[in-house]
Image (cartoon, rainbow, N blue to C red; front, side, top):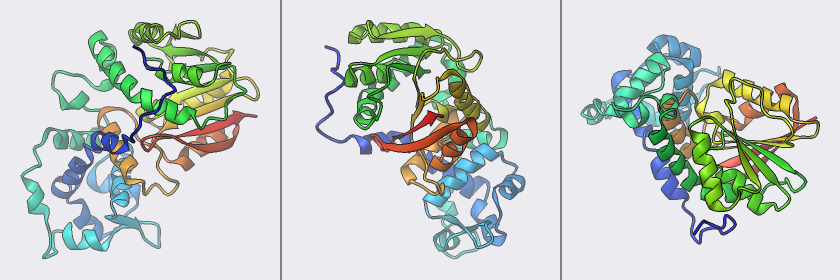
Length: 344
């Protein structure tokens, strides 16, 4: 039987989500400690992000993820001049000249596949193979293969059954009539929102082969009369018009800053005056020094996609830049949340 999409679980699965989302974070610490001697160099000479990139020959996007993780871990912090410096914990235990240095304890793990991948991503800014599997290309190319697309969409669908309704319960969209769910995967968010708001209809925009997978999932859930699927590429064509609410759910974190800003701009162009854009994701705080579980998740995204987790302040700035106003933060489930803003 299909899930009713308005029935929450009796227990909170947030910890179970975190086990999976945090898998790659420790591998990035191994890279920094053993391959880059990152903390020894930083203890000797504090640096800003651009200085770290020059020092270690790494790229800004993955370097940003690394810095955010180590700030959230309490290993580095900004000094009075704004440059990053080590904390006392890192100075005692992660700097090679300290008698308490634990680098050798990590050395035997340095050839783990994810460690090797993460060093390559830092050096090249190119996504690694999905799951560090030699048989798979990076995630963006793998999604063009029907078997992988079906498996990945199923994985995101089972997560969405919980996350979509956890967000929907807090949405101020009772006046919205038509949702465009951009890169909406299985359509789980569109279906869940329609289940929560009886006056809402939805369109899911997806590329082949996911569009066919999505249409089948929507039909099996019994929402084919209210949720339709349109095949299209959000990056190469204008977004469909005629919708007063746009949704990017767990989409923007797959892309680098330039594409994120472009997508926000595309939504602004396609929405009518008074229309709203909803971003659902795992957000870093305004200082980008936590929460730790989001900083850990960002490492997994940095490994396999062209993106990372973004801070609330970053996204608000890009929304205002595009012309949106009245940005509001919304609670969600499993360390995710929402940002909703209005086209003035």
